[in-house]
Amino acid sequence: METQKQLRAALLSSPGPGHLIPVLELGKRLVTDHGFEVTIFVLPLKASRAEAEIIESAMTPKLLNIVELPPPDLSVVALSPNATTVTRLAVMMRETRPAFRSALAAMEAKPDVLIVDLFGTEHLCIGDELGIPKYVYIATNAWFLALLLHSPTLDKEVKGEYVDQTEPFNIPGCKPVRPEDVVDPMLDRSDQQYREYLRMASEIPMGDGILLNVWEDLQVETLAALRNKEFLGSVANGPIYTIGPLIRPVRPAGLEKELLEWLDKQPSESVLFVSFGSGGTLPAEQLVELAWGLELSGQRFIWVLRKPTTKSLDGSFFDVGKVGRGDELLSFLPDGFAMRTCDIGITLPSWAPQVDILSHPSVGGFLSHCGWNSTLESIVNGVPMIAWPLYAEQRLNATLLVEEIGVAIRPKELPSKKIVGREEIERMVRLIMVEKEGQAIRARVKELKSSTENAMTKRGTSYESLRKMKEDCKLRIHQINKAH
View 1 (cartoon, rainbow, N blue to C red):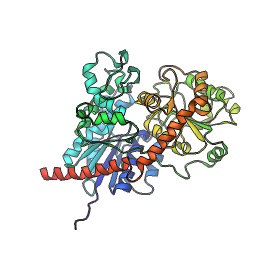
View 2: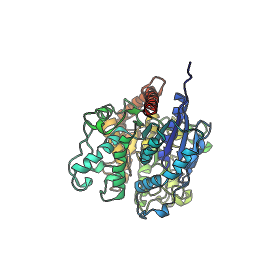
View 3: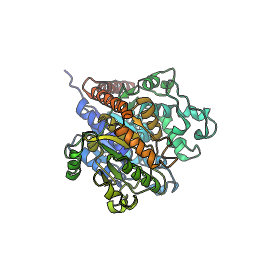
View 4: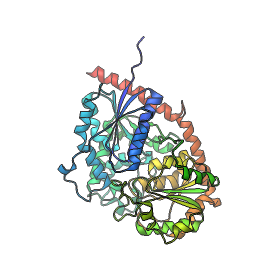
């Protein structure tokens, strides 16, 4: 009787904690649940404590083989000093192709399947060169994917800038996208990041399928539209596999002793966690208003404090390790803030073990930038959100969370457009933490928490979707081998 061959998967992650976490978690899931042998190729920024910690923790226990690719020489590329994060990431990934090819060639055995994230779509051709199936992992939600895949059509249909339009953009079978909610690359059609974004959208159909970090019950209608071949699905070549929520696991010793002791003393669901992800920053004026809003609310809080931005709201993405010491950071807050709030709040400089904090029973709210990793971590732990989108696809995520999924509230004005005042911050914090109006949101997020648990169990929809991807992958290998 023929024994089952263990499939070898090569996964390529673009730089940054937000991209690295879902790729690593997918790798772990392929190994532990589906018997793959996995090598993950990463391009570290070497700028972030979070990133270094993520890579280190992924190596213990040694489920994955992690290969760090050498940083590309960007001095040979005509890259503007003002290039956006999207442009810089796209260029870095493009320039790393020779190193990735060499690293694959150096493997003891050729991989059986290639999986790349969104910024790695230019590497799908390597799958063809090796004669193996290749997949694209979109580590965010189905609405973003629908907008992305429909963008080449919108590019032909819409005249002028997207943000200047007065009507929402229709996507077949999906919730329309308002002009103010478009993703960052769509803000300026003359910018290189827009061209990179359209390129990625056009390259996704080159793959044999799409892996998506959601579960079936989260976005039923949007997933149905994506799979409808008469509409949007015609631009997606292969199946769409819902494999989420893939998030970092809680670590028993993840919280430092002092922080854990403080949390253990607080009442259940009484603490608001405030964090803007590994790359988000706020203007100095907004930091002051946020501090006053937290203080006026009278609610307990943990605030991951970062040096204010002088440039873009994602200003720390490439230098998140250089974000200031605790005493320096407190100097940006109102005089006496730390003293006045010492009984109810803690400020943590620059970084915190987010999943471990969100999983603590004392945490009952999350003021978040709405990055998809953070969103999933909040839902998995049953924590309602105050949506505070800054950049990338976060405005789209915030609208999804507030208007469709029903697990968040948000300011009246976009924080990326206007300073949110202390009175409004106080109102939102109290609503989500103590007011009766917030109870429906709390109930909804707990319902979704239960839904995620069901999806990730053996025989749950996400488990079965990844199992189906494995079977389809083996069939595709057979087809490719037969053709040759």
